[in-house]
Image (cartoon, rainbow, N blue to C red; front, top):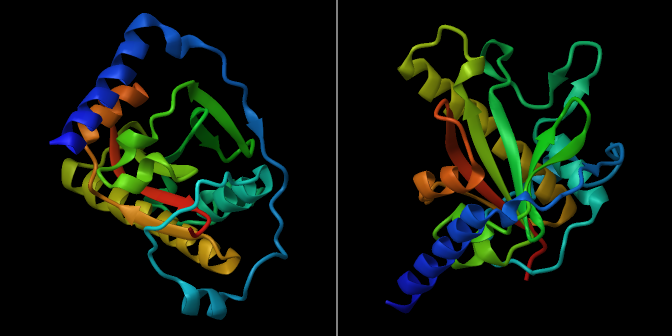
Amino acid sequence: MFKKSFLTGTVALIIASFITGSWAAELSPIKLPPPNLNSGKSLMQSLQARKSSRDFSTKKLSVEVLSNLLWAACGINRPESGRRTAPSAVNWQEIDVYVAMADGLYLYNAKEHVLKPVIKQDIRVLTGKQKFVKEAPVNLIYVADYSRMGGANAEERNSYSAADTAFIAQNVYLYCASEGLATVVRGSIDRDVLAKAMQLRDNQKIILSQTVGYPK
């Protein structure tokens, strides 16, 4: 009963903040440094170390770690064509990576390699139903933008966006394994509540979340 009441109260507080306009406070973009392509373990060592973890330190990730993490997730690795580290069906690149941290919610812009501010509100608690999500430093939220998927029907949108999210999530797993970070991908989310908090459009769909941080 306490856990349910706490979560309900937190959701109400976040929604109240939105209604009263406190979400309009300015967040600055975070310009990410170029990724360090020489860091970490080898691919085979990273595969050996890859695992899901649910115990996270509250220690923040540095901007350098965020840069490497997001570039590994779905950054541009072929600038001449704008293609990414993760594949996508028909090169739709329909999956957006949102980054929920203590100071607010950001959207990763791969072309500029920058975190664009979305809302100045800590919504980490809404990114999943597990206790650790509200304290871990970073929760990635994978959102499919169906408007980029051409004439795909509903079944194709669902299957392709799920597969494309999985590619990104696995990139994150391998990066975390290579750098000694903890991570777990999660599907237990109240998507309606989270989508409202993120101010998503009707043609955007939350697929999964993934928590990243240092091991506790």
